[in-house]
Length: 137
Image (cartoon, rainbow, N blue to C red; front, side, top):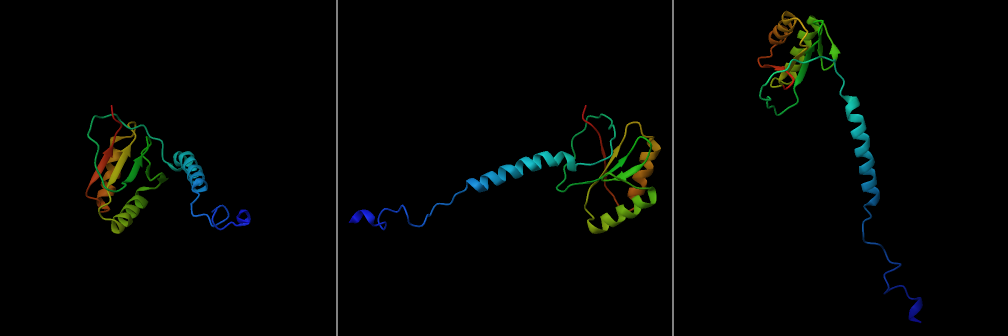
């Protein structure tokens, strides 16, 4: 008679364990997707940075990167701009975040004067600290 009773066996009662296997599967799939997609998200202008031995600059926040191509054309975060647009955009960024660091990536084949003109525009737009990016030796 006791064979038909399911009260004491615990086999047919509510399950109290959490099954984490589906959650782990989803997390692994998301990890793979982000690992594949991350290199595709880093768009930019291809420049050949000069080599220099320097200590890396420390910053708590992600810097704004202004690139100067070999032809002297400036771009902000991979989007080409002319000098007037550069000044306006830098001023808008600095109004929104005055402590944002600005780094200039200048192609080593770029004219020194072009890089200096871009840096002067950035400074006139209100940036006081401008860093230059190089490749380590």
